[in-house]
Image 1 (cartoon, rainbow, N blue to C red):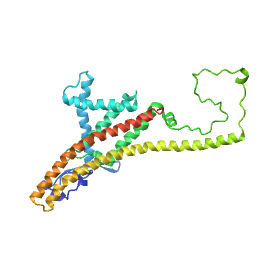
Image 2: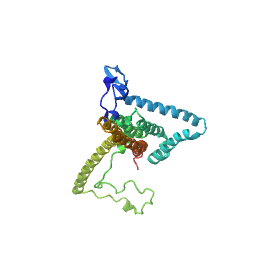
Image 3: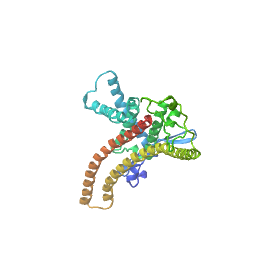
Image 4: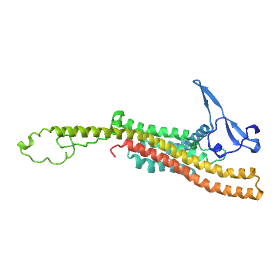
Length: 326
């Protein structure tokens, strides 16, 4: 397979691969795992490297947590560091993410948040293994995850309140000028004792508003409606912006981290190809390996942190939509 060998690059090892999964570029004559494609509905669909890694992540989650769920269903407690390590992730998501951000009805949405957190975490961690990669270093993958979060931001409150009530809850009520025909009571104070008035005072008709008062009220109501409409549009558009930021934040952190790791490793190849002496090449190799170890520990922290941030913000946005009164 020497014909497939090419100059290695950091970007090449971070991005997705469609035609073949490149394992080695130059050593052993180059090693590629061919990737297939299929045609459906008149369109060609390719099975890419990141697609296979996503299936692998899903398979690992099922293989780990289905037996754990069976143990919990039978009432037996998880024993040993392996089971407790994976159970504590679920407890953390429920108690530290779902409960504080959604409230009393959090348990209804905990399974979704569990799935989201574990899937993002496993995709992040796969990039720590040689010859694999992190699908979350692709904006297409993080964009798809953000679309799921966007759907839950609106789908959860719609399922709870209904379409009309949910979208009406987003409308801000702004009263710049009080209604001149109003009684001055705005639905508050029903628990307070009614003031004592004489029958004459109680039934005294309110004077009709003047033409200037009516004109000011119409002008203020028109301006208030314009402000409400503008805020309403911004609020709806803000949900799309929130989802977009979720996708970009996860993509930028994972892509940038893996680019740094791949670039540091590439120094070894560049030193060898540049005709460096054995002493210089050995020094570069030692420094690169030590740097990779240190950066890998940081990248491991980032993998957990970004999975937490993505899930926390999704849960927070869902909680804001589910509890508009707050």
